[in-house]
Image (cartoon, rainbow, N blue to C red; front, side, top):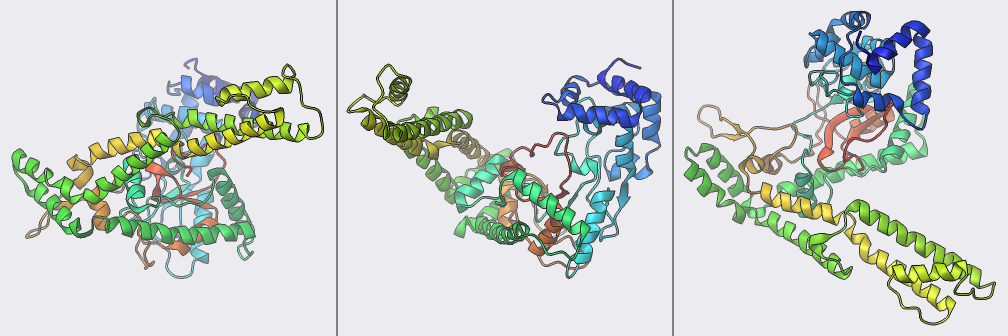
Length: 503
């Protein structure tokens, strides 16, 4: 057997037993340095231990088949499945036990899920008034296991904890530029504002556990507030989606017709001529982009900064924190001096004040108390000027990229879908990174009345999911917004939100 960290873990299992190994891994994970995760980054060799591979081969057929995705067929794939799984579960026994618990749910669509998610989803079906949406898009190995594979917080389908509903009507936004365009044009975000990620997940998990313990129990006040916010944000997202569909005004039909003619064009010259007509038709979008660029430029000028060379979000966050710290310390010194004599220039307080004045580019004037007041005011004024620029550098880069994308056929029109006999071509519906034509035609968030056999869902379905412990991708920000996606909130060895998920 190869001398890798994963192989060493297997050897420890044999020597000490599964329980002892699991306890050791848990203790390592709770230590300040996450040794298991650090090992994972360096260890890319597949596990080749015969007993471990035999344990994988004994998994249920619906797991080995990949749940309709990519099957586990070769020893190399299975070895990488083991390697990645050890980084998440800690032991082969825990990995095998987890995947042995992938079961078919007794809800419409009969999706395969981990036993825990299955029970909760069946609880949703019992509690829901009216039809339950149908979906079979749940557990699946969506990619082949290889040297790059890791289990991450984005692996919930792979782990059997997630299910998607109504993907074409609730597509993943997929691109930061698209989220920016929606926000710039409509003045509203393309994701739901459901509170800070960690706090929201903790509340949903506690609510789900409480419901599992007593399905008839009334939700806590915090849970009820979350349900009300979920209903409101679902409605707001639907309105924002509809507003974007109408954002081209009278140019909407002409834009979609130009898309169709572009798909019908047979020469590069004809396609180029059609693309040349796009700027006039999407003028409402480019005007909104220009307005955002001008807003950033005005905010930069007000702060005395160059709009072309703004500080990064990280750097500006540090600057704002430093200003807050200066103001807070100066206020404390103001309170202290009310009950004591003014400190000497060479005292710690005097030197502190001089340092603040230097940082804020202030000229010392007046007595100690007056100088402190000047520091407090200058720190507050500087913070007020800088705060609107938090993230502006990154937003400006996204706006520049967005302008470029709005000149590309793929971003504008998407993939061609040939029309049936006697009909013209249109845009093929994408479930991720939809084109502008798709968003104009279909929007990006379309809750619908639940009907038997369909995937359509409404806000009340989302509420019942949250009540039973499921969080939704509709609250993930930027390109990560994934309104079709529902996942059971569970323990994660590396509990970090997906990229862009903060919102």
